[in-house]
Length: 216
Image 1 (cartoon, rainbow, N blue to C red):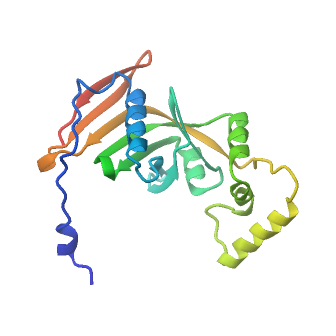
Image 2: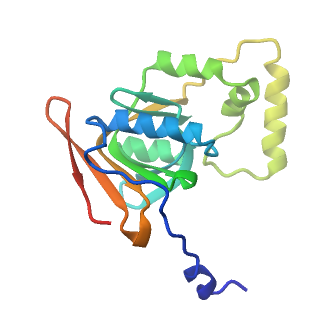
């Protein structure tokens, strides 16, 4: 039986790195790119895995792990089914939070921003780069809808695979990309005695950013 003591006694002292505001780059997306490259160099497992938190019209939050598929000068791109729960929530409330956790580097990045769809052309271009099975899966799965069984889902996939064999698999209208355009980005670096480094950037007019240190 799992006890609270077992959970409460899980402790780790972070001491591998530090983050000083003087060393943090002026632009947070540049800083993110730097950290992301370091995560790649450190062989972090799926460094592009991120928590995506959204909320519905009743302000009830939901969160799930999705994969980052692009970093641009103005934001962070991911792809999904527009009819999914997250897609419906973003239609009602086009704001979201992303969180990256890189255990091996004792780092976390939190991003808050406004969300908008990328162009249809950009979605199609990315869709065509996906493995065939993933493209078929986008058609076979009505994401977030109830299914009777695993067998039903696999049968739908098999039928589509047979019917689409030898044809170009088009990008569904209900599938595509979103961009999270940040107004706040926080970089967290684990430090000893829970005195962690937290540097937060907030967007200002004319594409400028203001950074400051937060208490851990």
